[in-house]
Image 1 (spheres, rainbow, N blue to C red):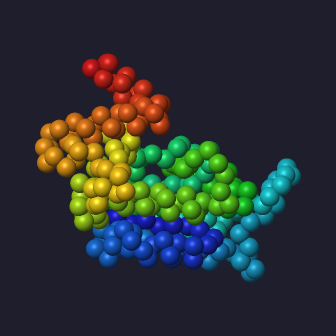
Image 2 (cartoon, one colour):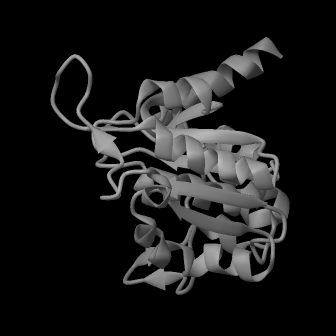
Image 3 (cartoon, rainbow, N blue to C red):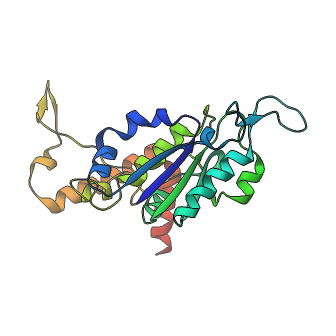
Length: 233
């Protein structure tokens, strides 16, 4: 899978992409990550990529031309399954969307900045707009990092234990159960006995009970969806 990221700050991605799971994904050949400085595509001699908004208002707006030319160059080299724009008013990103995007071959992710991008960019080039929550960041870079990480970990072969991603929160609509490791007794706080029993069936049942209880307590919206599906069946 290849992901091309269009940004004004490519250096922001260096640390994230050179560590942990993303680094291993690239090293194993399961993922290609490329950043592109939008300023390299502007026709302005001062490398300007933004301008004042028509109609007035606070903030600056990223111009069409540099973004359009960057996307055109990339599309001349390969076909893309999606052009994503990180935007606070986009569709809320979730595990289901991460799973879906992980099946694509080539993706472009556009990171906005300042007051946003010229609306014509969204109309002409963007196939889907994605938000990571109901809040505003200074730019789309941090949001793009989160999306890339979520996609990467469900690509087959990226994790050493491929079943690990399948047990993540939200994969089955529920939050993950609590997990423990050694020591079994830490200053009187002990691991639930069932987890030490070796009985796989009972452990599986316990984990599901914990998932349901935790989801009901912390995310009643998700819990209601699960209960509703069960009632309909």
